[in-house]
Image (cartoon, rainbow, N blue to C red; front, top):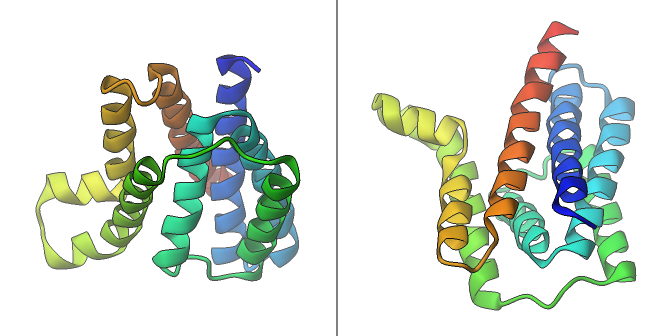
Length: 174
């Protein structure tokens, strides 16, 4: 699988993740939130099984959200279970616990910061930094600069984030 296919999986995963959340949180539409959650699980798991770098990212997002208590709907549980089934059946690349912990802390920081920073400061930079969950972006970039990840995986992750934001815009328009 090339980085182009991996980028497409990241794009689709980001779009499906946000759209699923908005369908549930805004429209209270469990059926379609679950369908988009399933699509997110499949695309995320496919990337995770194929690429060790993607595995770090998607597993960290999953664990970071679990620790931050963001798995708060049945659509999340369905997505989580399917993701776990796929990666357990297909297997994942061998992971370094240190790198995984770094990524988990970044994902967790993004989730906590996203919820809390605007409540404790009026600092525009910090509010934007956490509104767009930039801790993970910075960590993935630093891991790429240090040679732990390829720069292409950073671009794949940015495509995930762009698709996530785009899904929010599409949801609002529809």
